[in-house]
Image (cartoon, rainbow, N blue to C red; front, side, top):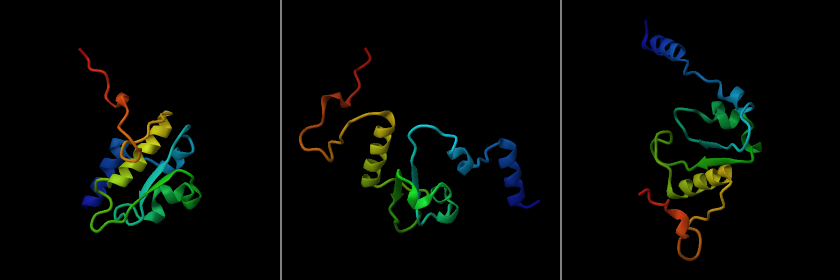
Length: 115
């Protein structure tokens, strides 16, 4: 058997395959899509972003197209800020990043020490 067939069998056996577009409509609450237009692993045309509405989607984070691998890479500082803003919204928080706010960082950034 080919490696592709073995891999396919293992994916099915592990129950790892997920129809994310079908599952998307079942997810309730705050949700968003992060995607890279130049992802060589998940082409835009078959990405969750495209399958759930594309440019009609209100909460999205389009990752910058960088030289090299746009699938397995770290987020840029700006992408991290945008990602954390979405996380804060999802959690109902109203924290403003010290990187974008004027003045010193709030005192509540560090969790209380556990003694």
